[in-house]
Image 1: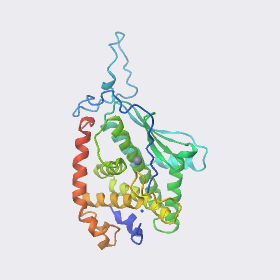
Image 2: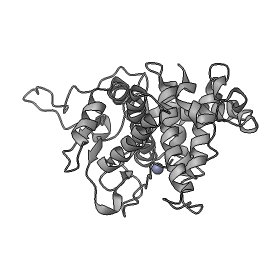
Image 3: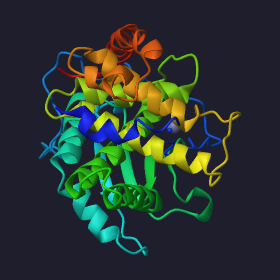
Image 4: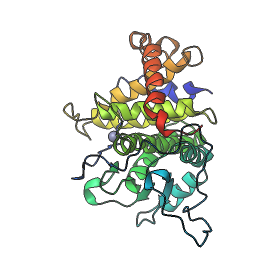
Length: 313
Ligand SMILES: [Zn+2]
């Protein structure tokens, strides 16, 4: 996979995205106490009930299964929008195997105590251009306005010949997927009560990158880089003063998020992704690059342990 194809044009830039994820802190009880842990055993075959697990029941209905035995489903919900061009964007997502395939695999491999909808919808004024995990509703929301903004940014890249049209389309899908996985991380931390320290926003970028790079079924590293590119767009907006450079924010700066993702991708396979190095005309400064294999090793060792009770094989 030629990561540099998408990253080459970044070289001149010294800055970087923020899928303005605002994890909505809802006044909600801290953690779901539905005892998420003892779900289906990790090694159990995918016993995902084909649909709402209603068995063509025997009349002698056995006592209802304890909720913790029922695996929640990850499902993507597309709501209609009043905004222009959304139907086309939706068709791109629905038609992209990179997107639908990974959603299907996550649904098959993760055991959750309850359903986790990923809802694409129009949002309130205050959430325009945002994606977030709603703790109260326990669902991921991706505002159509955010997807439209990213589409606009990648279309500009195509116009300015930083990316060709097909690449720009693929990058839009990739950046959207990265956004969803970032929000999935917030959801997992909440629903599974995962222990973390440090900035949850950075942790969420780590999980998104790890899931993509570890997903051998498709070019996940490219997709992670697509996520990084969208942070670069935000960094450009910050540099131009269109967005505030919020050093106090719970998110790292967009440029830092960009470099973090590039670093982890590089660190996952330094030989394969050597074209990301600054010395090879890539964006990643050598001073950071030398730390990346170790950064990757730590996060790639942590996530399987954090999720081990919640994964099927
Ligand atoms: Zn976030």
